[in-house]
Image 1 (cartoon, rainbow, N blue to C red):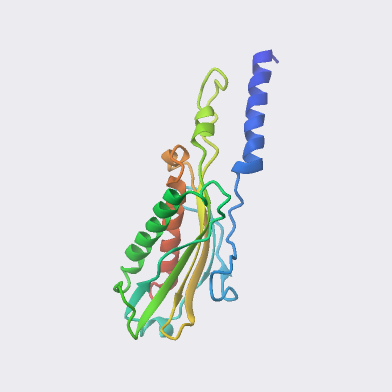
Image 2 (cartoon, rainbow, N blue to C red):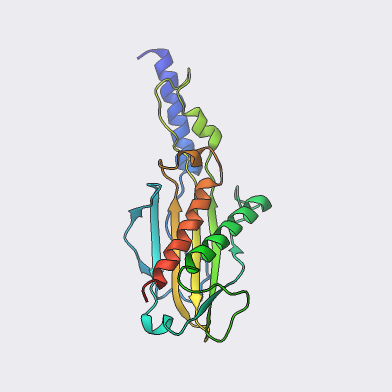
Length: 219
């Protein structure tokens, strides 16, 4: 093996070590304490999302009898529970961007089922959601994996991003109707997400809104 090839292998091994040490998130639904009840959450099958990233979720599906009387949804401000010491947690711009993205996604998804109201009425359900963790992609490291003099063989981007969301719907009596805890990672079908730090995380929170709608739909 030539010296140049040895240097390239060492370079790739170093990147993989960094990936396993800090860039590779464990995408599992969490339990932050934000939801009013975790006992009814059931583990959903592990699957790939439409970006072909890994997605895990736990959900509590609503019953038709409980959802039937609900005539509207009131969406509370999205909570931000991301560790301030993390790359995303202490960045107010990313906080604003991602909480706004989740709020819009909730309004879009749940608005397909019931009207979204600015003030809750007697038959309104309250929607609470929190972003509990965010993993930002690493554009510079992903660029380093493109074909260069150091890495002449295309490796492809490895350092993806993603997000973690917990959300629930509460009935007029304050009891939980449905809930989700979602962990979703970016994948190769969203190539730009490897080079735009927040893109995979934005898509993750939007998928969580879709998952919450699924717990209410056709009921």
